[in-house]
Length: 508
Length: 112
Image 1 (cartoon, rainbow over the protein chains, first blue to last red):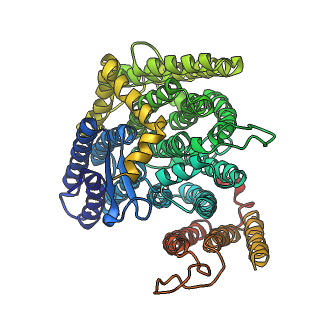
Image 2: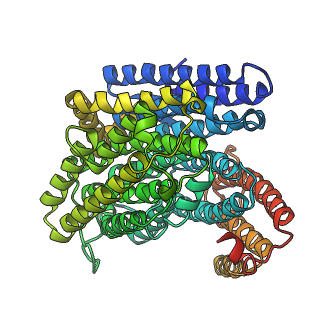
Image 3: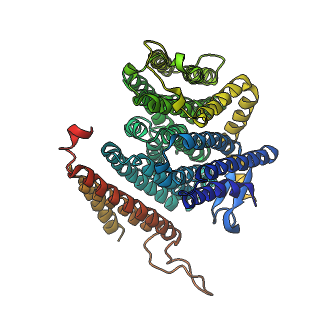
C-alpha cells in the first residue's frame, strides 16, 4: 500500500479500534500502539519523500484534475512529523491523565479522529477535501470541549460550534465560488488555471479574502481570536495541548498551501486601482500582516495580567500565532523564501513547546486543584523534572539561545528587517518583550516563592515521560539545528515552488 | 432565474444572521443552521441553472447541461451539516438541562 494512504488509514483505524475497545482493559495499550504505528507510518512516508522529493496518490485511480489527489512534499512531511510526535506524547499523557470514566466514553476515539483530520488536511491536494478534513478536526474538538459536561464547558462548546458553523459556511461559499470561476477544485490545477490568467480576477480576490478569514478563525488570528482562551481553558489538558499545538497549525498550513502555492499565481490586472500587476497573495498579505501584528499585541498584553496558568498559556498561544503569521505574511507579500522558513521554524518551535506547557499546567492542576498563579509556588523544591522541563519550555518560548525559540525569533526578526517596515520590527520587539514578561511571571510564581505542599506521587510516570519526550525533542532540535534547518528550508522551497507542485500533481 | 436565486439566498443569509443575533440560545442555533443550509443552496447554484442532465450519449450536445460536481459536493456538505446539527441540538438540550434557561442575557452573570 502507498505510504500516503497509510498515514490517513492508521489514525482512522486507531480511532475505530479505540472506540470499539473503550470498555476493555487494554484501551490504553491499544491507543498507544495506534499512536506508535501512526508515528512509524509518518516516518516511512518522510523517508520516501526525502528519497524522491514528493509522493502522490490519485484516489480511486482517477487522473489528477478529476479525482481527489493526495500529495506529500517536504512541507506536508514537516507538519506530519510534528503532528505524529505530539500525538504520541498526548496519547501517553492521556493514559495517565484522563479518568477511566472519561476513557470509557470514547476519549481516545475523538483524539484519533482529530489526528485523522489533521493528517488528511496536511496531505490533501483538493480544496473540498480540505474542507471535509477541517470538519473532521472540528467535530472531534466540539466533543472534547464539551467533555467535562459542566455548565461552563457546555456554554463554551455551544459558542464554539456556532462560530465554526459560520466559519464552515463561509468556507463553502468561498470554495463554491472558486469552483464556479476556475472550474476545478484540484489545488494544482487551480494554480495552473490562475497562472494562465484567463479568468476574472476580481471575484478571486474577494473569495481569497473570505477564505483567509476562515483560516484566520481556525488559527485564532485577531480579530477572530476570542474563541480560543475559553476553549483551551475548559478542555482536558491533553486536548488543549493538541488543539493549541497542532490544530491551529492546520489553519496556518492551509494558508501556506492556498496562498503561497496557489493564489500567488493569480495576477491582478494592470487596470486595477490597487495592487495592479501584483498577485492576489500579495494583496491578502497586507491584510494578513495587519492582523498578525494586532494578534501579537493582543495576545501578549492579555497574557500579562492573567491570574491562571492555563489562561495565560491560551493567550500566549494567540500571541505566538501572531509571531508565526508575521514572517508568513511577509512571505505572502514579497515571496521571500527566508521569511517562509522563519515561519515554519516558528511553527515547529511553538508546536513542540506549547503542548508540553499545557501538559505541565494539567499536571499542576491535578496536584493542587488550581491553576491560580497566586496560590502556587515552590514547585522547584518538590519536583526537579517538572520544574526543569517548564524552565526549558518557557525559555524556548521567550527565545533564549541556544533553544529553538531563539532561532525562530532570530529568523523572524531577520525577515522583518529585510521587509524594511520599522513598525513591524517594533511590534515584534514589543511582542517578544511581553513574552519575556509573562514567561518569567509564570516561572517565578509557580516555581519559587512560599512552598505549597505538592504530593508528587500523584503524578504518574506516563505523564512525566510524555512531557520529557517533547522537552527532549526540543533540546535535540535546538542543539542539532543545522539538519532541521535544511529540512525546513526544503519545506519552504516546496511551498514556494508552484511549477513543481503543478507538475507533480498533474503529470503523473 | 439567477436574480431570483440570488435574492432568495440573500434573504436566507439575512434571516439566519438576524436569528444569530438574538439572545435566545435556541434561536442562535437555528440561525446558524439556516446559514449553513443556505451555503449549501448557494453551492448548488454554482453548477449553473441550465437544467440539463449531464448524461453523455451519441449525438448529445453539452450546451444545456448543469455541472454535476457541485451536487456531489453538496451531498457531502449536507451529511456533514446533518452531523453538526445533531450535535448542536443535543448540546443545546444538555445546556437547557443544566441551566433550566436558554436566555443568554440572563445567564450572563453566571457564565461569562
